[in-house]
Image (cartoon, rainbow, N blue to C red):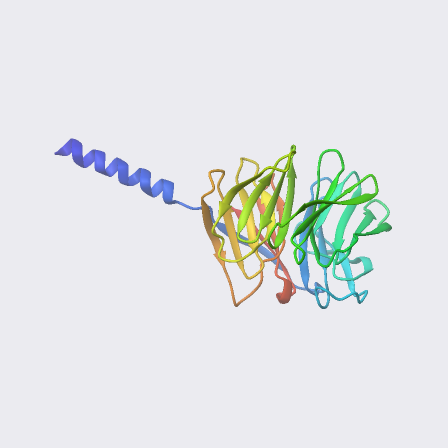
Length: 274
């Protein structure tokens, strides 16, 4: 009987350990001069956060949008680092060039000089949303309204994949492209073979960041943050639906810090991943 009791206790402890979830601990919130922040990108080399600011409607070509810079402690570094954009959203950095999705164009910014060096229109694009760059410098951008992923290579844009429902967050890792397709996380290999890695998100996915061990962080704009394990299990870390948005997150992998742009709440919140 004693052996059975001990065995039961050990199994119970193991079950409790396996049920333990990753947790978020709030570090700071930047609230000043951040009108409608949609995306945050952490630059480890420069120790700076790039924040895309829509400052208006998400589909309006009004020239009110821009890119701000925050320090790692949440203080403003340069609120008007880039101005004159429309409704900038996702960003990706490759060899000192920041690529920004801006409704129907991919904007190229030299991060050393802070100058816009090119604006490449994507034919037939409607609502460009997130951006990622692979190891060879090919740029992938999602069009959420058109359910398409485009590729910018050597200055030319082509259609990479279509029929990707409500595609938003993108991340290139090795030879694979990961994409949030509605309420699913996909892996798309070099031959464009699709594998559904996780499904069952309560809302459509927005931001996507790899943790570094095969797991992912996923945000849903409506106000949800998920932790997605490599085996496809999903855990809800935060649900603030109706209180604030959780748009396209940034991630500092070395320090396990995530940065959440709150969109309509006009702030960026930093959390440690525990």
